[in-house]
Length: 294
Image 1 (cartoon, rainbow, N blue to C red):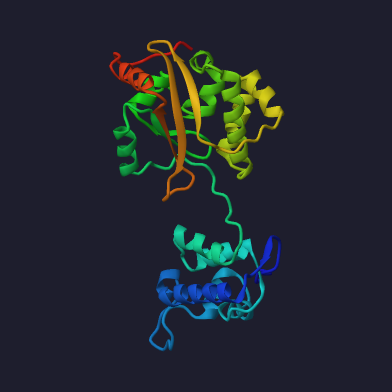
Image 2: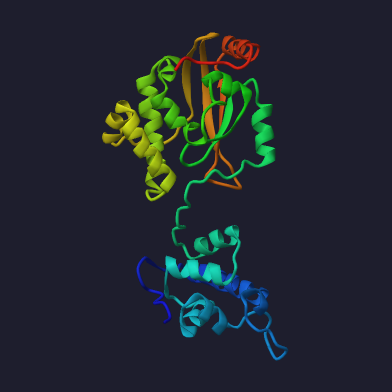
């Protein structure tokens, strides 16, 4: 049975110019896709390249009339579920799928957090930033990559299992972090507010849900702050550290979105003063590995 294109979450297609762009995009992808690529018989009697409209309609579970209206740039409604079906039927790449949703002015479904590999160039950049601490996180704040300076700043990362190599987990479950950060309470509230705002955009993500459940069980401080529903947007800020091996270091930090994977963020710490730069250099000269109690 064909799906009702107006069922569930629906949106009215945008203005005429955007509808024409959407129609042209769908037509181009339909005409570039061979029948054999989707398991259909090709044959030599086809008068148009690629798939026929009725074939795309069948593959995506909508009526031929409705799909024809879509390619004619009619002012109709479309559901997110149908856009997903069209994405699969037309074998769209992730970038093409995002473009389809953007043309339809429909919210793109959130992706589950995952430990996707950090691309080699970004990993090399993180390492090159040494002796300035830097790391890459995903939307659950898992540490995907970090340089030696960051490992020395927070200490003890190498021996942790993957599920504990997470910025929020380290913040609330390691006693050493409470003494490393000069104002732990303020920092914890700010960071948790950012984390909760990010988690709210993807409430059904299993990794984030598991992390929150584990933290609720492991940390009374996390449970107390989480119950207050902190929300805070990210802004570049200054952090004060009291490192057990090199003393007080003040660092400015910022966070950048990774263009090819917007679920990843590059976080960089830079010394606030010349004295702080010297502190990072002293940290870099310490014997390895650096350990922070707790």
